[in-house]
Length: 145
Image (cartoon, rainbow, N blue to C red; front, side, top):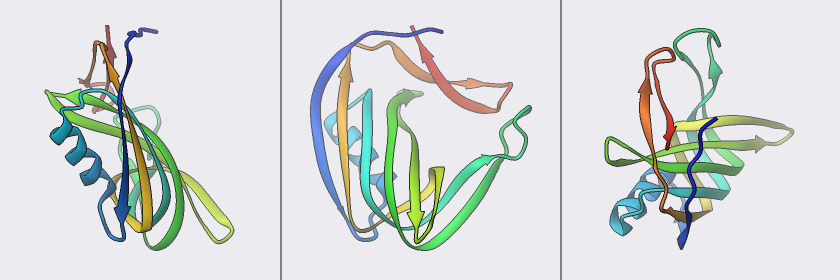
């Protein structure tokens, strides 16, 4: 295990309207406000999405299993914002539910707000962290220290 220590900086609270892209909104705030590292929470509803619900094979390069929907679902999620090649990169996972069913997913492909979705961005300052390519898994992972 490796870790880095920092402290909290600014806090942003955003209200996304129906149809807005959650990823685009977080990236817009991060770029406009020069946020390098942050914890990101979201709560509300998702109208549509293409989400990853696991790898096809847990032993090799990550090939995502994609699930797509276009209906209203409840969402609560958490992620981290860390630079990748100097640009903000959001790693986000969420629990989404509809009627009696729920799943935990990575909505990195597409995620749009339904009615209202609230996002909290808690800036972290003084960290030494970025995302780096990990060839074994064919993904970018957190690198600290």
